[in-house]
Length: 346
Image (cartoon, rainbow, N blue to C red; front, side, top):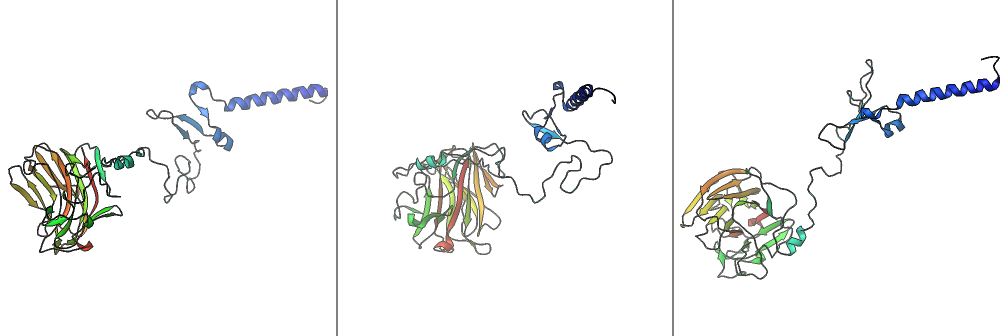
């Protein structure tokens, strides 16, 4: 450009700059009809990634596509995915604190329902293990406190000789609730313990709980040893308002130290089965699936006994108690049953 006037050379330089700038801008501009757009975050960092539409079924989400590696690119460094070039989390990375997508909402009404005397309904979406069917949890007692509107800690009259069960008076002083457990013990050979959800026991303010069909289960520690048997005469059972017409389901009832399950029919007959295995000295779940005319008994999520019922699926309330077995008696905490929770599903 030698020999041209200075002004002319300046104009030529300016035109060149404008052309170069226009080409650079067109190189990064992505036509709208492609559905692609530049990622501002990657543009700022210098990474040439783009946002591509998410697969169908994931509306509103996007996936960042990594730039293709040249054919002779070396293997990815540690901490990078060789196929994508993206950073990967170490194997021992701490999990995210964010709640999972399917986490249930918090239940703000459980405490209010408890105070009103209604059975405490869980928001945890729990289901009974091993029992077929689609279930809705309708009752969940975790024994964080003893709710007197649901449970009565004696059989009709507190520590009254006229209100005995399994050979002993039922005394509220032998029932304690602490650390998420209900503990029922014998204090002597004449004084035991009981918890009942009978809504018609005459106790003022007691609402209780009953079920007809569905599944009820409790997680219980029965004291004793595998070789010596289960102590005392404890039981987890349900019954109706007009025995024997409305039947009795003894889900788990250690007799003479051996675990059994027994049904008292409307005719006064009994059906029972001894459950093989050691059920002493550990926590296990014991439940009954009550259907129209049939009861299935489950221990630890396994069906162990099934029989025809004769009670017309009359409403049953729940009972936990410990009475006296003269040959296996153990007083105080050493002979106590511990109940972690009681639940019912429909």
